[in-house]
Length: 281
Image 1 (tube, one colour):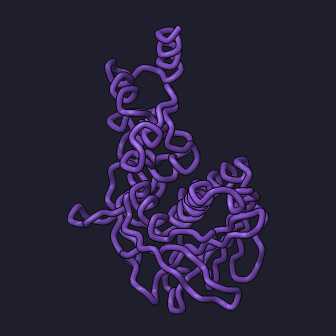
Image 2: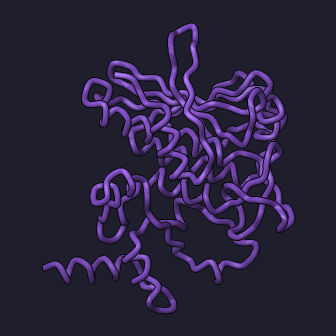
Image 3: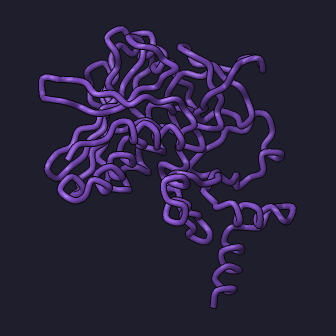
């Protein structure tokens, strides 16, 4: 069984709200499937390459031949972004993923040991032991999406961001004050979609309160869809508040999201969950 790189790109594009193109490359180890961000043109961007093994799946960050500026810019990532990167590594590891990081040829065993700039080489792989490759095509595709999403989310969190003017055309974000427009050295992005994608990469697309799954109910049209709730209302954060997408965000279905905001301050998620459970007894 082979991965469908176009379905992979389509699914993650919807999840991350980012333009992605499926691609196939020939390597010394054989054909590899994956995707790349359309906003960073070759040969200055990167590919997320997915490899299927007998009992494993692996997603690798593969920079283009002339992606030196991108790598150096990642080395200049802000402290807040590095903190989110570290938290995300811990969360993905707890989910059973094996994450390997190397900077300038040196293996990084703890994210707190990420070296300061300059970075000339950055390697990242996310590997998971799974039987999906020996099961159905749907199981393989679903597992590949999750492992690739984890790898892409990690990459996006350390893309170098800086505040820019409101005339910027934003595409995605990564661990900066909510509502701000930001700029990456290779393009312009906005924070909210990437924080959203990081939240979903950790918690999934099932409602955190009632367990509703849009994909199971609506099929392909609902796959990957979920709303994201801010535990602390954006209006109360202040301009300097830095979002932690794992601590501050949680996936909710449309109904639960609306119910949470029926009061001010919003209903606590645990309280709403109790209401849902009681109403179904």
